[in-house]
Amino acid sequence: MTRFSDLQGKAVLVTGGATGIGEALVRAFHREGAHVGFLDLDRANGERLAAELGARAAFETADLRDLDALPQAISRLREKTGPFGVLVNNAARDDRHTIDEVTPAYWRERFATNIDHQFFAAQAVYKDMISLGGGAMICMGSTSYMQSKDSFAAYKTAKSAVVGLTRALARELGEHRIRVNCVIPGWIMTERQVHLWLTPESEEELLRQQCIKRRLVPEDIAGPALFLASDLSAAITAQTMIVDGGWV
Image 1: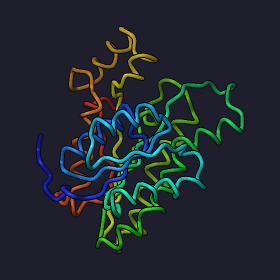
Image 2: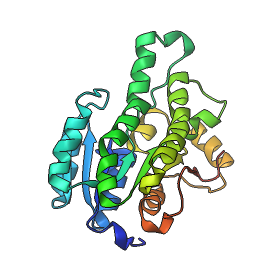
Image 3: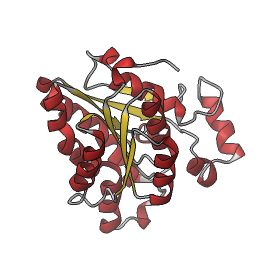
Image 4: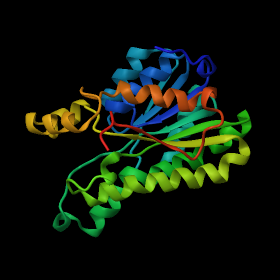
């Protein structure tokens, strides 16, 4: 794997880092020599991963929907890693639903799960980045909102808003040399996706539509995230990078 030497020793915060894409991100930044703090509601897998990685990895259990508790969880991680120079807003949950299944409470919960914490995590760490002379934020979107297939409107709407949030934060924080970009994954075959949604028929259709004729895996997202976090992308901000094998 390409080495991004400027990430060595840097403190990185990853939300939703215990499994799936988040776990791949935690492992990738850790391999680059970064001090990685990560949050997740999944205590068992978070503690497992932190114990496996050992030094330079710190985990805190957190329900990211609790926006009052989020800054405290980030603060506890900061005590272990130092001030954060990189934020990866990864946490999300793509539960399916139809229009008739959505209540006002469910709609609000979907936004709390998929976008609200992205803003408040950024709010909690941007002063760290100012003190360091700059930093990088990466917000995770989804190609789902670009497609007319399937439903789950609450998830798609929240994920489409990530692009707007990215551009707004990039404009406000750019004067402090803080870059904000959005990575938009396609259908990444995490254990959850394979277990809940993948069928032989849906995989055949996906591979027919993708330009790259293979399953995309969490590690396919790690490389773009490392690049956008590193100084190699020092002039890139307010941009979206679609990583979907040429699906959309």
